Amino acid sequence: MNAIAEPVAPVAPTTPDPLDFAERQDGRFVVYEFRGKTFRLDREKARAKKDAKRVINGPRTPELNVLPLKYPEAYRIYKQMKANHWEPDVIDMTKDCTQWNSGALKPKERWIIEMGVGYFSSAEGIVGDSVLHAIEDNLTAAELKHAVLRWIAEESIHMDSLLHIIGSLDIDQDEVTAKFNDIPSIRAKNEFITRHMPELKRGLDLTVVENQRKFAKALFGITQVMEGTQFYGLFAMILSLYRQNKMTGVGQMFQYTLRDESNHIALGRYLLTELIRENPLIWTAEFREELRAFMREGVALEKDFVRDCLPEDGVGMTQKEFLDYVDYNADRRLTSLGLDPLGTVTTNPFPWLDEVIFLKKEKNFFETRVTEYQTSGSVKNTAEDDLV
Ligand SMILES: [Fe+2]
Ligand SMILES: [Fe+2]
Image 1: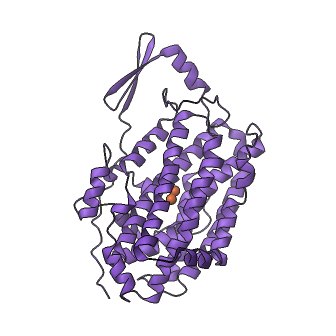
Image 2 (image 1 turned 45 degrees about the vertical axis):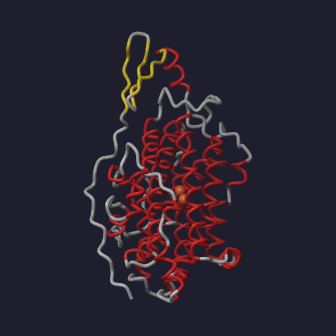
Image 3 (image 1 turned 45 degrees about the horizontal axis):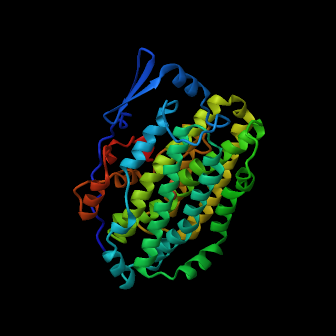
């Protein structure tokens, strides 16, 4: 068995990359300055356009010009996503192939990799499709649509990473798909999250408060329950293998995927917050309880899934720690939206995961390549809260 690798050195928490953005008045113009460029807009027209913008039910225009910015946080998250760009097919899978084909992995470790490929092959597609048809289609403000389109593109990158894994390890795709589509805990998770998607895709009248709640619940379900809670158990298992120098190519891809998911969770939280600020009738005590109940159901399904993935202790951690991790993530998603937590797990059972997520630029060839992809931003500038 390989020795446990040194954990990646922790990176000191930093403040988020400021939105390198300034807005000032100049006579009859409003002037925006960012990226070293200046944009001059007629002040009265800009004010009218900004006032009219809404998360939903605002004017629809074919252009995706984000100016004048009414929701600057969405543009900041877009910039953060862009700075974190990565490409799956530059990841070296040589060592993974050797370990996969040489019997170096225990059966339970192979099972975790197969579950990772099997589950995320459907989950990434569900997220991409739902975000496009149930979320993006219903948004009206340009800077929100703009950021969400980047989010959808990242789901395509995640799907591509699974293809890279399947192709590199010569996994029989049909066999994996058939095998995992029949696992009750995976079917239950997917059915749970897509339950309300068909009606949202049909173009609900979002001037009706009850429909606004359906939209809010879908946003909450995708970003806080699915991406923010249900993805994390398997992420932790695969990154635990990575920490032990096992399946390091796969681990790197999941590391980058998790970092992307952190931005999706933050964007979802921001969209929800702004949606509710503009449509306060959504946020009744009854609806808040409905969201908590939805999360509770998502947690129960995720725990069934964790028990299937890790029927006994393994990969250097106990099943109990993984189950606690589900509770811990669920509660931090709830409390970040001002909702009451469900349980009592307030301590992260895997603090090392936060360290693994951060990247050390000089660590190896792959990360050097990734550094080259980065532009104005830096992984180190990602807010600590956004990463977990
Ligand atoms: Fe994803
Ligand atoms: Fe995502």
